[in-house]
Length: 143
Image (cartoon, rainbow, N blue to C red; front, side, top):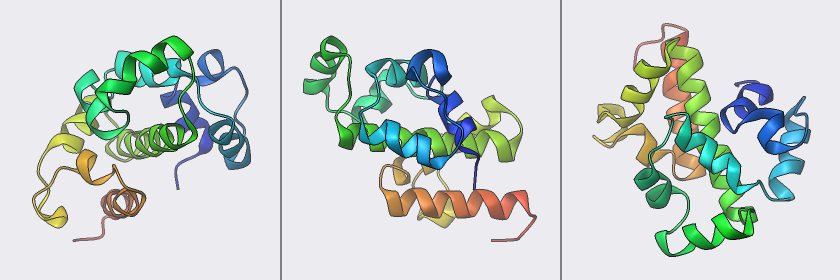
């Protein structure tokens, strides 16, 4: 499992989250208390997600502008942002190259019935499936 600090870094770290994330309990507390919209913007600005992907997998287009004004995601949106940040951080860690990880997340994967990992990771069970594939890659376990 990827370290909570790496997930927090993908979301913008202490500067964006306005709290130090030392462990999963800290991260869970932040998600339950609602992540700042700036965490989503950080995922986008860092190149981990496009605006279109954020609107497709995380927050509806009709809600995006309202969240930007309110400056907070809902709890459900915070959970989705954490999940995508977790999977993206895991891909970056396992593949040891952010660009390679971002390409891998968007490429069709036969183990995911031809879907791309980013699409599959939009659900919690899908995210677990993607993480399992990544850790198998990390440990040299064939599919």
